[in-house]
Length: 301
Image (tube, rainbow, N blue to C red; front, side):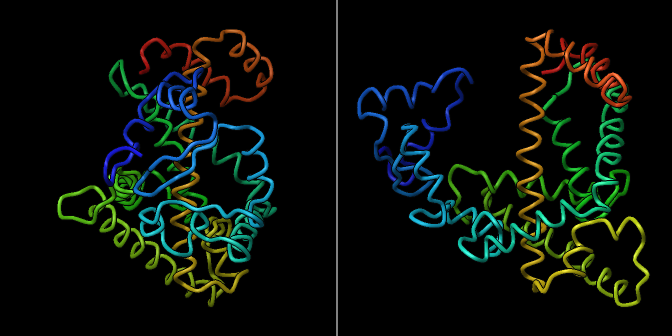
């Protein structure tokens, strides 16, 4: 079960090659089999590397099994976060998010905004040194896209940069190995950043609610999630705040990692790059991105 409190968390999170299970999993599977007990992220856990059991669990989500995360993550994201909720309330929150994403007006604007934000990030490379972090660039891009479609925030605005800085503190604590609410810890700083971020969102929500009552919301605001939930749902203020924060967290982190991995693996597959060039031949943004990518791929870390 590992060390007290930490359990086997440090070994479990040790980096390993993406084409292997990692030394931690390989040793335990060899010793205990594909299903064994451990102690991870502060709690006892059953670890399954068995494909049949994993499929059974996923198929019975909400029936025989419930998705859950460490209590520390729930405290950070809020009790109304989709990562914390289970059952009917989780389905309702998920339905709200999916309905927004299928919103006709959003579909006409989403891809244009994604292209615009991609070009902004790529253009900024000219002002950077010869070496920079691809993952950091991906995080900038995804944060800008999420902030735009959640609250109509533009990357060039000062308030967007302030929110991004607070969100950075928030993320460091949200994924801390030892989430202890003690002075000086990343987790304590994340809790403070959560309060700051929620106050920021709440202020925007109050202004937006007044504009909706007067029916003078701008065209851009009419396309974002904050406006949509205020108009089309009966969620409380607390529920809206946790929903916005959890979507910012989920959308930003998963997308930035996916983009970073795509860049990493594309560098070893010239054929895939060529296929992208052909399939995206008529798309200006993709042509620019791929041209810049090939130019910078030897310098990106």
